[in-house]
Image (cartoon, rainbow, N blue to C red; front, top):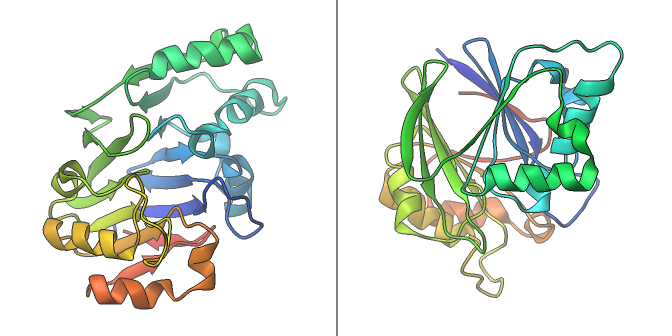
Length: 254
């Protein structure tokens, strides 16, 4: 039986389109409400999906590029100042090295209210670690991108979900994804796109999935060209297992 539900809040990138918001995903598991990245459009998509945004327990940030974090300040503003919202329990935020310093710079830019919330923020910098949060075993490894990126591996009562964030092919991606039940992996461009070492195409996704022996993949972080070509056909050449092409507001029982 499924133990968790994943809702795609943003399957896109910095290339703004009406179809795809920037990166954001909601994971509901064991009564916990978890965000994986919080790019532009995440707050709106939560409302559209019927997810109670004040009840988020944790935010796992892959990296600090705007298309993965732009809605953090609007989210905190909404929770802090909406008259009908009263929040007292802590909010747990995890990100790659430099996340605490990055948050302090946000406060410098947007105001000291970010340092004076009516609930506590627990902000942790993590890299190449395994730990447990609220009974959920979690592992992170650095991915391969132009800035520090954390990939995350969650053990959801025996179901393994891995989220890569932005990355090119790297041994760490394969190691983190080993035998995952679900690999949510970026697939930025089609195979005929000019190679970019820090992003993946279907061929690279297939290489990771094959070497890691994953069961299923979810393709996300899709630039507009992925909607203009036959992404699924290219993936099927590289990976024979079940494949979901993410769309905003898609719900997946894990």
